[in-house]
Image (tube, rainbow, N blue to C red):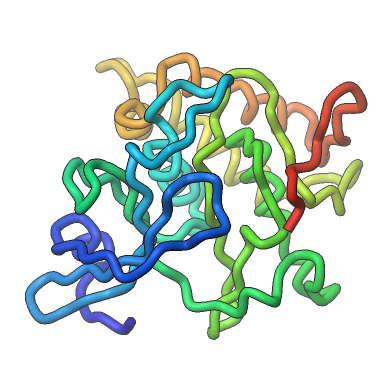
Length: 244
């Protein structure tokens, strides 16, 4: 929906009304309308109480990880993740609220054109940084303006290596200088200042543990040091299931 107001403001302050449920995910996910004054937009609402418990992720943290992924995307300057906020109150309790992206669900990674696949280098770097354990082919959307968006980041930021993705197109390639520069700036933004934690670290601390933020910085350091797209780990599962 077209709006003259910052979508983040509407997502943060608007009244949430559930319009329907997405049925193919593991956790409860709802299409919602968010209204603020005379403006409205569609959003994806993921209530914490609808999260399926996982053995390797702390309980009731997936919605906050969705928001952390948005802030990392913004800090990198890549704007890959649709505007996302954490609402402490909602129709089904606290949860994440993300701007809904109109897209063709039949156009996903496995049917992307060669040109669109070549646009995925920032996506790969982003997933390595956030340690994405579930980059399915359908989690990359193309909107009507030919812009790519990334969704579904609830199982990210683990301190242990959990990277599972369908995108291994660039293994061994040198990371483009511009992307390396962005990651370097991102790492600098995570470093403490003389007055304590950086602004970015304070922001992420609302959604992630200190250990997870340290692990995020370490992954950035490894990428910068290597300068190349890493290969898949031969000793563990590196593809999500299902892959679409």
